[in-house]
Amino acid sequence: TQLLEQSPQFLSIQEGENLTVYCNSSSVFSSLQWYRQEPGEGPVLLVTVVTGGEVKKLKRLTFQFGDARKDSSLHITAAQPGDTGLYLCAGEKNYKLTFGKGTLLTVNP
Amino acid sequence: DADVTQTPRNRITKTGKRIMLECSQTKGHDRMYWYRQDPGLGLRLIYYSFDVKDINKGEISDGYSVSRQAQAKFSLSLESAIPNQTALYFCATRDTGANVLTFGAGSRLTVL
Image (tube, rainbow over all chains, first blue to last red):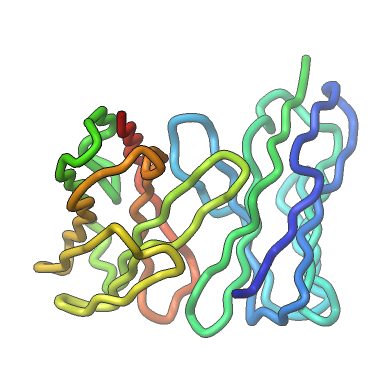
């Protein structure tokens, strides 16, 4: 089983602050995805990173895939209350996705 | 209508009862999945299917069974429910060759 470790597990910050969530593994993945889940809903894909060292930006969110394709980070600039939710990373290997346990982010106004 | 629809959304049952959770999709995807989500444990794969009649075990298949009789439908059954099967269950679909999962809204199951 490929284990994906996410940190921190919980994060509570004030509106306007920056934050980074980490996703680490000892396994190499062909791609890594980040999902966001809101209460009462299923996870929704934010981004897929495929190439080692790849950086993708989605408005205030910046995603990075490690050079060795074993780890990834999600950085949010100037967090807003609407960013509140559970952030999940998922690594793909042999057409199977393995999910991390998630980071529960709360952005307080 | 949602791309992936799960029914029921909420269910409370008793130990030993048989339960079926249904999933239907309008995306025309070949691949369908059932995941279980527990607080602090993330999403764990129960079963998946790459085509009609194709069934594959995931990491936590014990105590569960599935049926894929049509491309658009994938049902999950608990033959004899037990309390530690209390969880939020998600169905997801995926297009062949793509690496994006589309999730349903979830089915919350409570076993008393």
